[in-house]
Amino acid sequence: MAAVHARLAVVLAFTLTSLSTVVVALRYVNCNHVHAKPRRRGSPFSSFYCRYGLLRKLSPSDWVMLFALLSTWGTTVTNYYQIHFMDYSKVNSEQSYMVVVVGNLLSFWVYRLFYILNLCLIKISILLFYKYITSVRKSFHLLVKILLIVVISCSIGMFIASILVCNPPSDAWSYDVFMMPFYGRWPTQCYNPLYIWFSTASFHLLTDLVVWFLPIPFFLNLQSMPLKRRLGLAGIFSIGIVAIAASAVRLWVLKQWALDGFEKQGERAADLLIWGQVEQHAGIIAASIPFLRPLVKKVVGLPKHVVVARRKGREGQSPSPAAKLMAQNHAAGGGGFGFGGHEGGGGAAFVGTPERDSTPVPHRTPIIPSPSATYASEAREREGETFKMPVTPLSPVFPVDGKGPEVRDGEV
Image (cartoon, rainbow, N blue to C red; front, top):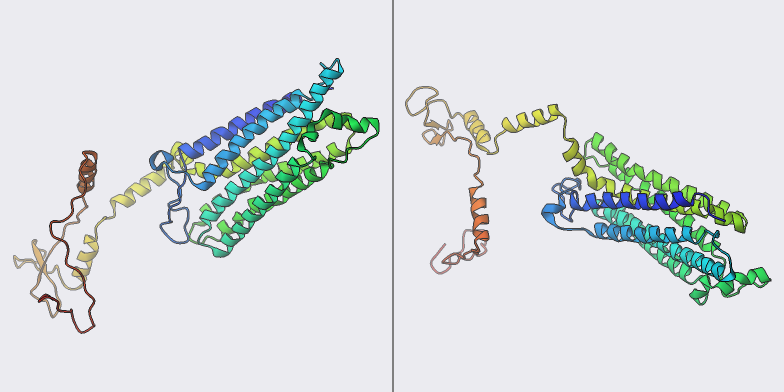
């Protein structure tokens, strides 16, 4: 007896895990985020994305997702052994049958632990990401914290319950305990694992619904962002619907598997593994897609007309306040006569106010600050020079009583 879709389960497990590895690697290497304060309140994405190659920093959400990815590789290897020990074609003695049974029971016991751990880490990573970007909304921030507590506490409880399915836990893969029902004896030291399986699957389906649909109203209500960008962010997180659908299908497959007989359960077990893999990796990929936005922009690029418009906008603006100052000076009456006595003369202009009719104000040329000082300071740092303190310390600043500066040691 061999499981139906056994080879497909193994190939799909390694394929999806490799794809998730590539996506997470791109998230870290190219488009990682840091915990920096936003430039404008209410716009958390304005300074959120940056290149990891420059900043060399990972956030808690990134670390948790990395552990989730490593855990999914453990699940993939476990799936391989599960499929391997579902094949009874080489069983020709009681000893060989015992090896297959023990290997099957042990691999499924380990798989349940990996399944709970993987989905817990994926949801924690997503919620930590929500917790950071929603720091400006206290009510949403509190809701995310509550979800974190619920996910962590329930996952710990399910993890412990899966370990203690038998007392002692080693009876979960014991050949003698497995053979007891065939002789009319039921083991009292183990409980029916279907209870914890259905509880786990139902819990993850419910939390998937909440976690993936939770940020959509938040993004749609961000008035500081253009509507097009808000809809784009909401659409990105809507990709999590794939994880929700996979979780629902897996719950249905688990129900059908539980209703089948012993032989049918062995044949349908591969379908359970397939949808478990789809559920996990859909969550990893959907949670990592928002971090790939800078990479997509770099590869695809902006339309040519947008680039030209931005370039013209930069050329038409002055980075210094000179133009604004000259416009105010002209509105006040200046710029009418130059030193030479003729209109439009160069050199300087007189401000046409009653108090400063004769005060010359020279025309300022827009000055672009030079970055040479910054480069020079970087060069000094490379050469090993340190910052030099001034020769004399600065004079202390004393408070005033509102009537004028305080006189101390003969100085004002």
